[in-house]
Image (cartoon, rainbow, N blue to C red; front, top):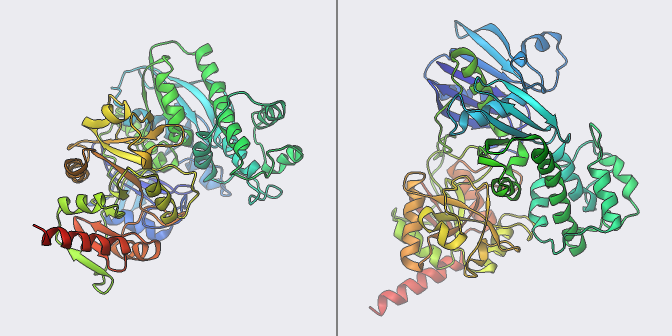
Length: 540
């Protein structure tokens, strides 16, 4: 069965399943489009270009009710977790009549997490869906009936981001209806700077305000906190950073207490929704002792909604929700122009050469194969650098045009993960934090001693595995800095033209595209590398 699914709105995407396999997931923001973009007509043609035949089923993910009464009869809404949220009809496309399927946004997260997990059909489990709007636990039985156990808190992701907005004087709280989509990830970084665990009386008032029982909390309502210390205090304030960690723990504890009181021990847990990208919280669930295992898909946020709706459709028509998938299921890298030899030296493909350049503290863009699904760069659209010096992290944040409190993640050989990060299992999707066991990896160790680790093996990403192995042979460490290759506020770069422009504008030392090496002639670091290499050859 061929299933084409689309999520038209926020984090717009197309996903295509064929006979239980994810063939591709095309996310609108990728290819240097603005993050969280909705679908446009050109995106439709990009998806159609990947198809070999007319699909048997076309799916649309549920969202907020539209203005059209006709649309409301054929398209599901945002809420609802049971099978009654499924809407099925028939439509014509390219001369064929096909099934048209729609189910709720809520189900897209839940069915997506189950279908992508390693749990076989017939495995009862719990699911936690926490995102900008929904914060609830569910029980999934052996027949994949989904029953909501209870709403813990509405808008957990929004409330989390609201604390960042509260302290940020650049955020106009007087007119905003909702928090900024980028702020939750920034608060996650700031929370690691916390040096105390007990809130002041004033901070308890803020916690009570932000976690109050209401359906929607508007930033405008923060006017009630205007006289308090943290209001517009700025993000560099250490007391606010202390409070960021306290608030993060308090929000997690609300959900943890609910789980302790209402869930049986020893069941698997699926985590879905944008809060599933919070590595600290994922680690706490893993270490809680409440669950036999924890699974978080790399597309936990709305970038995976189209996949989830396709899985729900597959379950409806075939009775089987399980899919095989690869995290590198985006579009191929586009060689849309010749790299300008006036600006770049071209080197023959050689992974040992790239490793040597990285040991010389050069910072290099790395584009290989299809791009990653989900928001995390996992070694196919990455900026790579040596992991040793704190100054490298600082330079990477300048290149990325982002705040200096933001951490840089390590990518590590799976075989070395226990030695350097105490990680004794594969962690291929950068979804958990681990504590660094050495001071040598300063560039990838956050202020609290943890790192948001991705592990790599020869099976998960062969080109990156070979680069890490070559780097290890030179330094003794199979570890590199890995951060996403993207313009600020945009999705991953996916073309030679954008990659060349980024290297020139943001002062990378060079880039590698599909194995070919292009080094920026004007880079002082690259010129120093050439001089050092020439001197080494002269002394042999």
